[in-house]
Image (tube, rainbow, N blue to C red):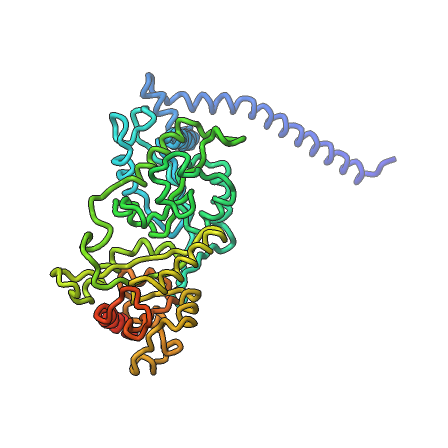
Length: 440
């Protein structure tokens, strides 16, 4: 038999179980009725009509609504940007130092010459330019030599993607990237679209921007002078066009030819048509030596005296550029040697190869005593450009800093002067001494 304590414990446990069961039943009944009651309370205070619904939605659903609106605005803006970027009149690729393209757009519109709206080549009633800007750094070392810097090859990767699958068909490229594009076989040979402008190219495909009169136009003038302008070949000649169309290529071809043929009405050199009182021969591999001819001409004209009695002081720079294939360079080397021996220029700015030839042939005048004793004197015959004060001046600062500034010897000391005179030598010597002043 159970004792009294056991009976009391059983009774207590039974009462506790009944109590818990009652509480659970009460909680269940309360839950079933509470939800409808809360919903009833929510709607009970809503004002009737449209304003009531707005007030109700704002009170209970304002954050979901705000989030949905933000997402909707983002979608609309994205679609709008895609629409604006699609079907541009011109698609351009630029590789070089940091550049802002805003001024370039108006220049291209002025050059287009088609459509009721300037620049609207495709006739869609809008003028749109897609400008792909790939930025690389150009560093100049202590000797004035320029180097392209692309850390991690990030720019090269973007450039290759754009070159392969991008929509751009007119390119403005830093020289090393230009040679890469030409090696890829995607560029248009100029002679095949215009024999008239083929002579402007240094290799048949590209043209240095600084060699064009169009370089003076807004936007273009902000690019480096050695930037190479070139055109992608027609999509009809490619196995995969990546969406590029023949009629779009035609717009770019016409613009490219307008760039090549633009005439600013300004003569290429100072006092064009006048005989030069002094001529400086520049031999280099950088295309920039051609693009700085105007500021260098102006600088030389300020230094020279009027030797031919025409009332004008005219200095002029002539250039021989080494570039292209091995065969082309051999012809250029022959041209350089011929000019050094028989040409009328006696003031020279030479690269290593030309300087070595002139020194070995005994063509150079010895530096005056005060110059020969300077630390920057080379062999007692020349001075490096980067050590001179003129290297910081417009025009000269763009030339190769390692070039040799030197003077041809007096024609009176030569068996065959080839028409050169001692008077012309003295004028060249006076300019040489001014240019040879040390950097301050």
